[in-house]
Length: 214
Image 1 (cartoon, helix red, strand yellow):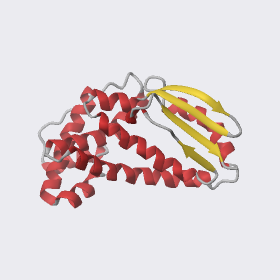
Image 2 (cartoon, helix red, strand yellow):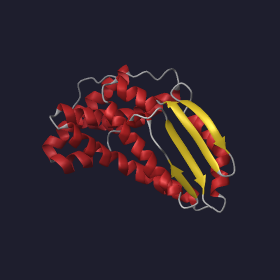
Image 3 (cartoon, one colour):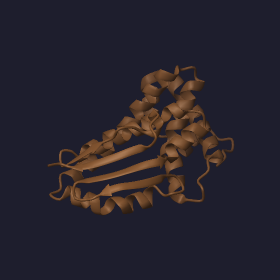
Image 4 (tube, one colour):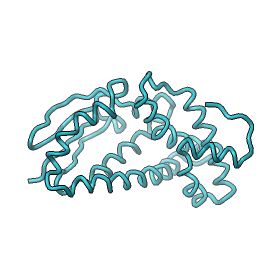
């Protein structure tokens, strides 16, 4: 996707269509109106560049992950670094933004977790969900167990880890991993989510454990 020369207002309308509109309040609150808008414009341009050079591997689900989840936060992070923000501070700002979305997802998980047969429902749908939303073009999934007590699978390859490395910001992957921890905490107390490590944190795989509460 390329931009023609447009007014600032027209450019911002286009940004809203690319899922970067959620950055506006965060940028302006952190940096003020003028600097915040400058960062937004830089992030927008970086986002368009990432979309042009990203590889969706011929899969529309991969494309959705790239354009709606990975590239928006990646472009924000790269814009912060380009603006001279130190890496640790840039990660903190991106983390704050990512956690907002994770908290919304946690609320969805809480609805499931409140159902009488939450674990059974989760277990019945989890393999189909992984197949549909985390296809083999982007993830290598090993199913360890999926029984009446625990659902355990390992990711030996992950699109988020591959892409953050590809574009020179592997440290950003942990932000996405942390979002899992927040989101799945909404399943408690009926389903407990545990994890020992992730690819982004240096582990051999991302392990996911969903344990039925006793």
